[in-house]
Image 1 (cartoon, rainbow, N blue to C red):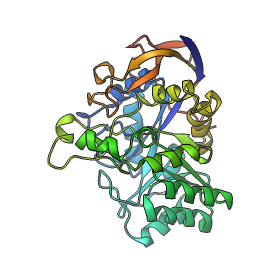
Image 2 (cartoon, rainbow, N blue to C red):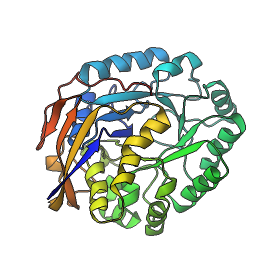
Image 3 (tube, one colour):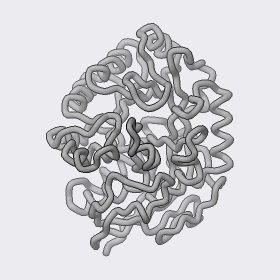
Image 4 (cartoon, helix red, strand yellow):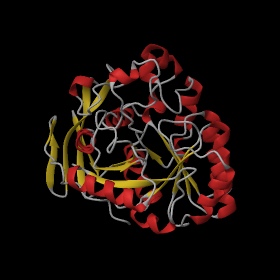
Length: 351
């Protein structure tokens, strides 16, 4: 066994479901799962019930996190056809989240007029994070170039998408992107075995797409889990909602790739520590994450802290486990036990 020490790590894309979906996950259980996964800060998405689309709703959610979060946090503001963001609400948000393709929840932009109004009014210094797939990914890249705004493309999943991102970056467009672990480690073949548990947006792709993501990892600014839990009952229903849990399994998977020589430790730090800070302008918390590397372990839902109680990586072998997490001088996770208390997390500061 060897010990790998990492700095404070940020998962820049989670859905902790509170308010409105606490039966799937809540702030306390989701941030406890983050600590168990070696993650010391999370950025939470706005597609709650109701969606967080104005300053008042954002402040209400911030108070909930202040009372219940076990790790540090930042919050996104959302926008929809009838809920255009106000520039004055941008200061307290890590970024603005837009949905250009169908996904879970009511936030969806379909008209060009609304999209142009949002891009025009949103402060250029704050990033716009976009859920776009396939052809729709070209839209935010074009608007970033035309309107001088910073655009971040969430969960890039396919070879043609990462090729488009590379081309845009080579031409100097202010575009950044992320990849989710399930798109790095699972394929369409795995989806057949997982059934409804593999229902997600974007869907799992082919082995050639996974290979393209790994080959172009130098273009990727950060890896984020897109932790989107639903109950097993919901996933096994006639219309299973898209989304899988991932905040707790992301780091063991990536460190296993370091152990196997597929990824360097420095690049890992770049993707989970430096990248989120650079993209969203936040400071990673003062922390140390200790990982035991070596041995033969298996990911098991029974050992996870997420409320939903399942994982698409059930039974997958890894060579790493989170041993200890120290946040601001206090041990908040050690040997399977979350020691950080609800309310001990802090809002991530601007860099």
